[in-house]
Image (cartoon, rainbow, N blue to C red):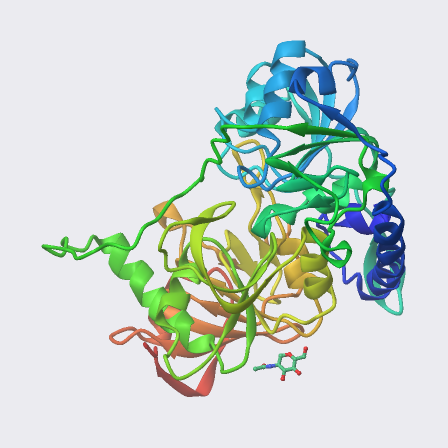
Length: 467
Ligand SMILES: *[C@@H]1O[C@H](CO)[C@@H](O)[C@H](O)[C@H]1NC(C)=O
């Protein structure tokens, strides 16, 4: 179970299908037993009224597993209590570190964290600064082994001394349910620590939720604390605009983006399951034709959403609307979908792409680090079409489409198509690039002049399509 859990925290070149489905079966066969036993009236968990009491024995140097996804479903009170206890030298395992002034970011500010095991740095400026200056250790150390001709990651399970978890409700026996996307890393982390401390919004009588609806049986739960006045911050709140009085004049960069978005939207086909990166790919979904259905998957645990943007619900980074028939699940389940090859289309941005489809999109050494998030798993997954959307050249005209990437790779020979504001290329993993569309007014020679590698021109070259 721990291994299954923790594969999700390290996202590297792999197609974990075999390993993963085996473990998933194992996991699924265990949970029902746990639920059955945990409904007995015998209490296995201790209940606390003061969160600081619940964490005061966490010693310096401990490894803590912290649930949540940035700001979504984080144990706000337990994190704040660690500020009070002043514990130092922590190794913190968490998908990311929230933002500078909330979530785990608070413990980074106070330098109480010595080492982070994470996959995404994202919007946390202090995390990026400490990592690039060498003040903070960040763990990304995979070993790769080959099975049946494909490379798989082999890793030690990540376990913790303590897990700090945010859930919705606990019953008095210590069984736990989560709300909406807050299952994310909270659910698997409950099972991977010696002592699991759960903060909940409500403690209810046994039987209030049915035994078959329990997400975490009490066997995994040592301490429960009922918190109040949750801030539940949203990292990026977007609300639907009522009406634009005067459409703003478009900047050049907006025109470029819109061109890419309107081309990218043509990649959606009826019935597809798709995972979209932040930015242009997400925006492309606003242009999905009304007569087709596309199921969007969000890595932290939703299937069936539209990213246009009422308010209400937090998916870690952006606000979305969840459609009827949608499902919520934990991050390990999400990666079972991804690694198992069930996602038809992955669309994401890039800093560099090579002619054979190598992709670099997570860091510029010494300068900038975003983290790969789920991208390494997404692009390594067999059967998933990988479409890169990006501006043709970097600032200052530096090439992004190259013979060979110079930045650390996200995936090797994984990109199937590149869409820029000037051109569309198909990528063959052994033969290289073919130009299939070009923006009107431009010629293949113009594209050659701004591309850092050779490409073939399709005999069926056509003007760049737009939705
Ligand atoms: C999506 O992938 C599944 C296989 O996982 C396949 O059966 C299905 O036809 C694909 N759908 C589309 C629209 O590409």
